[in-house]
Image (tube, rainbow, N blue to C red; front, side):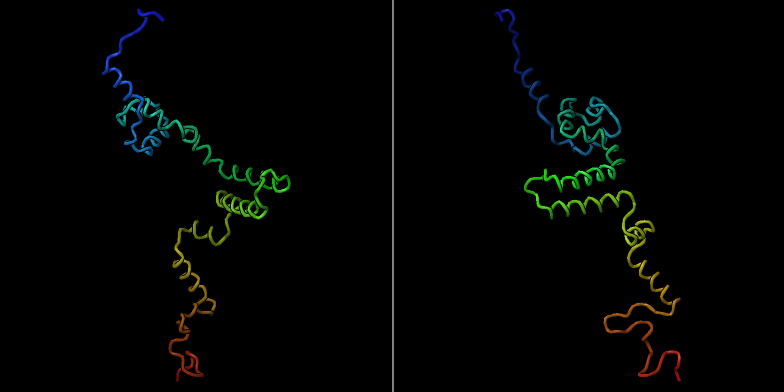
Length: 179
């Protein structure tokens, strides 16, 4: 490189270049993610939030693979859990998880199986009923009590043993036989 090849750089140019390289953390990452999920290019996101293209790129660089494939992961989450469960089952015998106890692997397998069943809407019936009906536990208990009334069993008693079926009972007499 000769003396003629050197280019003089003004201090203001240096400051501008440094500003481009700095990451502006004041813009919430969630906003950047939301805009990226709308399939907007980095340049459009930068224009919307008022920062440089480089800033958007640097902020999303660590998670871009996840953001760009988020919907695909959501759509196949149950299948991914199934694959992981299968690998764990084979690993129980092959012991590739050195230092991991069989108990820890079994617990992990159970947790993953539960999550897979939830993803496939095959959870246990009591949880599934609450989710499908959108009812609270109190609403479900009221329905159970109403069904018990129809069957002649009566609702559950409170802590003192008093419930709707015991109110008005006298010693040795039933409610129906009031004299």
